Amino acid sequence: MEGNMVDRSSFGAMLDWTHLAAAVFKVGFSYSGFLTFGDDTQEVITNNLPNQTLKTVVNLCLVAKALLSYPLPYFAAVELFETAMFRGRPETVFPSCYDPSPGGSLRWWAVLLRLVVVVFTMLMAIFIPHFAILMGLIGSFTGNMLSLVWPAYFHLRIKGTSVGFIRRAVDVLIVLFGLVCSGIGIYYSAHALVRAYQGQQPRPFQKP
Image (cartoon, rainbow, N blue to C red):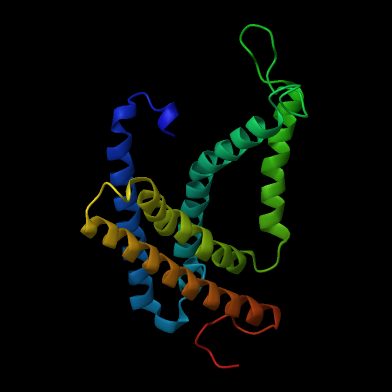
């Protein structure tokens, strides 16, 4: 992301404000949902909405949000694939995705491969049973590791000797907090997934 920015000096400010805004909105949204529906709050909170019209409107907004947010991880994944496998021989096994002529347009088979990636991820979401709970299980690990654990850990590894005790202690607390949250999320998501496959309601506090 930093390499694609017009003004790279604004990367730090962009990162701080976007993470802060995302944290505030997510915490506020989840807390409002829990205060509204309590223990009956479902993994996909739109399923709790009693009004079908409101549910349809919210689901359409979620579809638009998914379409707008999908390109960022998609292009990051495609760039990783291209770097690892499609830089041309002898560096990689497969030829380059771009035409060697001036301008370097994307080759037709590379466009087809990108379409296959999109269709494959869509089919996974359609056909994998209890996909929402599975994503919650995966996100309990990856989300906390990417947002909390790894940034603080790498900061300790890279600049741990040059910062003060308080800053190191904050990093350690963030790592521990992320691990605790990840463990709780994995436990309850796995519990809900097992209940779903057993044909029961995937509610973490509901007795069998």
